[in-house]
Length: 201
Image 1 (tube, rainbow, N blue to C red):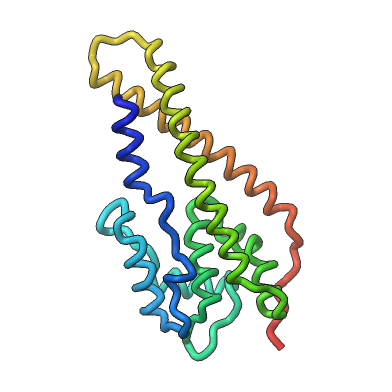
Image 2 (image 1 turned 120 degrees about the vertical axis):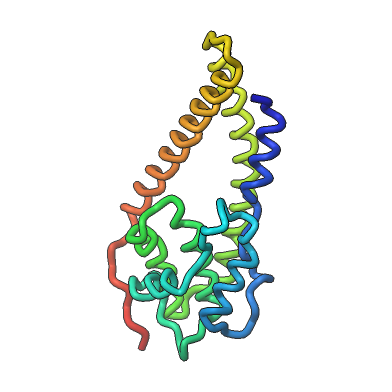
């Protein structure tokens, strides 16, 4: 496995710096189809295959029914709704829908009471996401190097078998790190107040 080529190709395909930005979101409210189109345009190149769906009507309806974001008005989604859907999109790859609901509950509560500037919160989130991307590239480089060093201890004459086995070790290491971060996030979720979202007055 060539570390440099592998790393460059994987980082490129991951699109780790790709997010829905505040500039991507129109100032006018959008219908559901327009919201879906916005996400499809932004993340289409990151699909694992052609059958993968970035966002669907069923997904959005399930988020609404599950109260993952505050109620919409006149079947239209505001800038704040789209920000919350973007957060859900990013969170759902690692934690359960119930955990997402609990995570976003204080955000929804403060949005409904008018105590939160969601644009400001989301801007900080995106700044952290960029720093996360930089840190990920550094950590990924380290994990690849450590995997190569560990795999070199294995003796086998078939190069293809060694390459595949090295990839198995790398996959295992990446998943292990992912699990550790996910478990840490879940522990933090458990510390959030478990209060119901208050209805809008």
